[in-house]
Amino acid sequence: MLAVFSGKRTPYLPDVPTLAELGYTGIDFASWGAVVAPKGLPPAVHDKLTAALEEIVNSPSVIERFTTVGFEPGFMRYSDWAGAIGKETAEMKEIAQRAGIKEE
Image 1 (cartoon, one colour):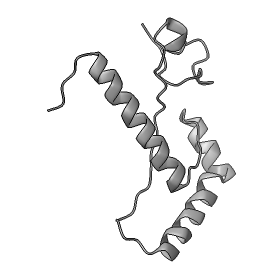
Image 2: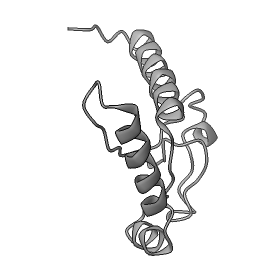
Image 3: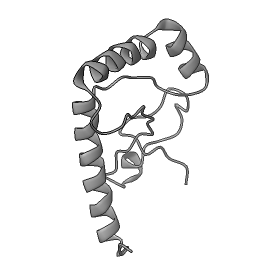
């Protein structure tokens, strides 16, 4: 079986179905990358880094490069990212529990 874990098909593999299309519902995970900074970063520095990274990630040259290698570029502010990570972690924990996988 070949499938993508995201909730929608990727334009890079348009003939590959999602897990939901194959009957495995409740699984919607996309790969992602992040730039993180140390805890306690001064708010002014955080804001400056956030603005610079948003500009870079949304620049045409970066979007073109990301899509050339098969990534779907996007930018999330910390509060949105933290919420998404929390949701994804809870979903993975539930899947592991249903599968009988024990935490070590």
